[in-house]
Length: 602
Image 1 (cartoon, rainbow, N blue to C red):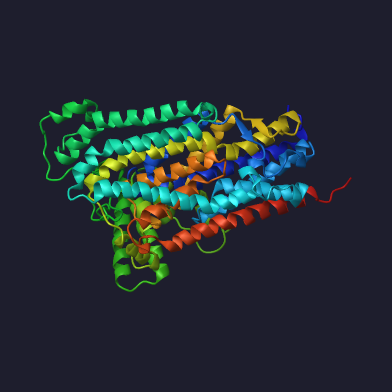
Image 2 (tube, rainbow, N blue to C red; image 1 turned 135 degrees about the horizontal axis):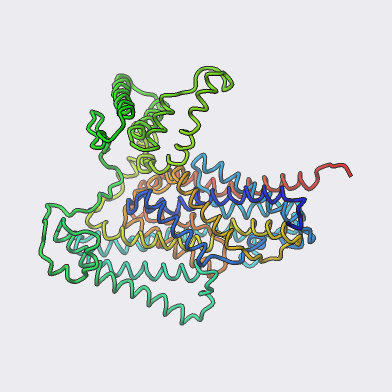
């Protein structure tokens, strides 16, 4: 039994908000980190879910921090709690409640904010309410105070923009500006694997290895390992990747499969089995022809459907035809265009087989009737809808069309704005972009691994403090051991956030800021990684999400015009970042002040 058994309810509430904070971390921060790869079409949203889940959990559980800061960044001293374990439990519960509530509200409204900054601001608010404003570190405080946080908010995106633009201009000069860029993209790919491999190794050493303590090794050791890894990756790329890409892209052999990469140099001597007119590589264009299921109806799997389900789908197709004719018959208002765009996506989902299609059709065909929920008919309808609502909540994000949401709805101001932004971005051949999609997968997976190993401490630190104080009855010190089960639970919750709600942030990131492609995307991710490494060396707090956003803007400006960037979206992002600090801090401070001074009977 816990020592502070009378505060079990505080521990339960704190656990709920720790899980909510981790969920928001996945839905907001991790979703933004993967938005670049998804927007570039280097990976699909489903692949991002799988890779994000695997690398986040491996990073957190295998090499994640076994100790966490009890007071994030030393904003307030541990002495502020006067060695009262109950007050400390309450303080961190309030901080988690304020931070997670604010981030959840922002995620619901597709506003990207930093979960790290939210929690830091909430802790500062709690510190003001508990010990007074004089105890809060408002200045620089060796890079740990609020002054450093404000500075990082301005410096990190700008520096990241510079690094991202530099790397992309290197690719542009070496490859894109050539008369025949395809061979250049193939034979220079080991060089860019060298850069990516070195940066990724440094990320693991300095940001993704708290438990391994690799950053404590001598400088010559770190330099040897990072450069050796980068060179090793480049050599492997030259031996295996270049022949594979040469056969697929230059020789246009359509028979080449992914596993042929292990043949290495033997592919140079392999005769062409199935020569194609064009190299068979994915189409990386942001705006593509709408490959909808033919509404006239030839679903090759329809013969396998149950009769009732086939009838439902046929009825749905007829309704879509009818709706399309109705929409074409008159000019739509902005509100109608947005509703029509949403309905178009939902109509495609209702045509799908499986649980989501069933659930979407059930909800569509069983709307709530007139009157309030307590009407007898509405209560029966609601009970019938509950399983479908749960199914949609779990699977909706998996089938969400990220690119359609990013490009906007044709005819609306948003759609017209994005069309103008894309018009100012040069489009490069798919054969050229194909080489960089592999580099981008490498950088994205490494960033996810480093995030799981390091940034999970933002959520698990306060929860570990609450749990320790509840179990032992003692106020925690500045560093607190973290049980591995807490790392596992929160890393799984982060992944659930990415899978079920990450689409809400991805829809307004990536291509919503500027035109994406694999060569641009890998430049953005490497630029952001370098910035995070630079700031970590000076022990300055920085948000990975802010860095990737800054790198996105920097690469967008490489198109040679300010019009290639959606400055409206950038302005909204910056506004949300700035407002996070006072809002999260005020929420936590007010709530803590009320709870500490609540009248009660003696």
